[in-house]
Length: 291
Image (cartoon, rainbow, N blue to C red; front, side, top):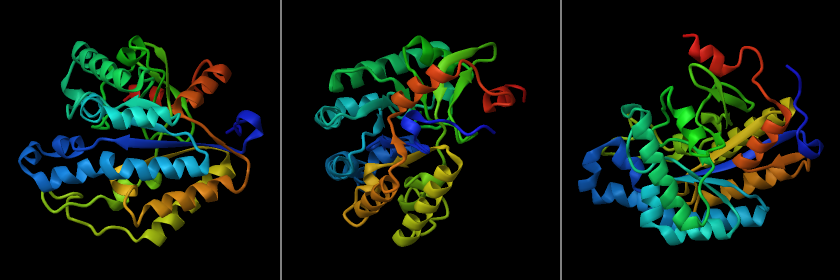
């Protein structure tokens, strides 16, 4: 595979993404959480305490991130979203609330995503261009709906280490997918709850030193191969007093080589469209649609 030539001669790209789901992760997991104040408080911690710490860490590192949130979160915490935008970060969309897009046809998805875009735009002053569903799953209709609504990029798949265009069953869209990975995700390492159990089986919270070491090794590999590393954080996880230092140390480690392009999802998508008009042969979308 040909090594990518990233902007400015950078050796690799890094996109820092932050999922701001607040209480809605738990509602999406189990509707009974509406009657579980303790569990909902875990989500509430993110916008109230985690976001300020994450914003300060990003400021200190000089990194602009892509935040992704829900229309319902924008309505409940408009001042938080406004502050994220004021600090120069991109704000994308996760849907409107705790809905599962796979349960909606194209018209239903269009209505939900348009309503979510309106709420986020009202809070931040700019309609979202990026999308990552709370449920992590979409349908074959979703790419066309996103394109119609003006979205330019997504980050929801796991099929590559480089960007590529999303397809419908009949055509390629202009929406660029920027794949993420569980290896560079804080939620799978740190989120924990007894009831409803998360993760199921209640595995223990990962050791901080081991997580930081894992993340450094992952970054080193992405840089070695010249790929696009997507870090995914959640303020209710990484924004805890004992964990925010992990983000600070990781960003410092990533910046140390001096040859990394830190970019938002929108910036990566714009650059990708300027260099490639179609996917490589055997891309994940073509393979998926042949199943």
